[in-house]
Length: 208
Image 1 (cartoon, rainbow, N blue to C red):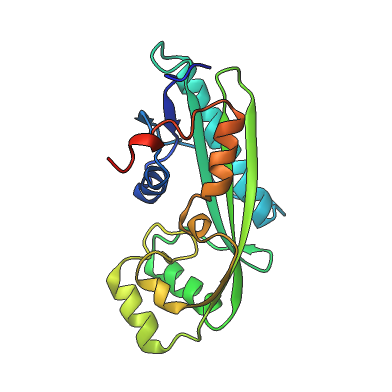
Image 2 (tube, rainbow, N blue to C red):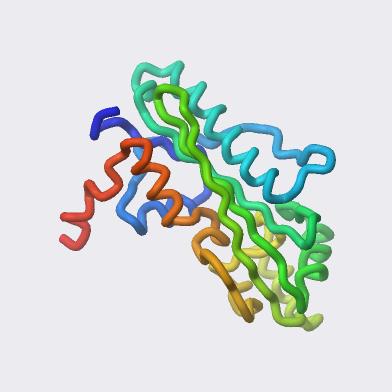
């Protein structure tokens, strides 16, 4: 690939975009992947996160290959799964789902798995799974009611956003904070570098 090869982010998440921009990377194109995210029978949360990240990257790779403008680009995709034991929690869309998630997370530890995948122009897909352990305080009825009322949980894996109001629930985190937000930065930069993408290209002027 060449230094001017476009970077394609296979996500519509403003959080993933902001994390990429934090390390000096501004995608040339945003192409959310439209895939079925339903877990397979007996699929573990860690396997689910990695499979979905790779599937998203491969789907957007196919779309990019059909475009002369994007064909030579590199695709970055990610997926985050919050798990209690072997149970993957949903990306909460309904109040009942959010209440269920918060009830399970209250006063106990859980794991957050984020899969990251990079699909090169030649079709090669590199991927990495990152595991982070998080523990919530015991949530009071007021904590839960007020968080539900905020609406912040909607569309979030496990029914919460650690970078927002729910940060006040976290008593311990072991691992990658940005991974819980949605994109582990060390692993993302390493995968892009391995694929030949100039990760540090814009750093010299970042403070200008």
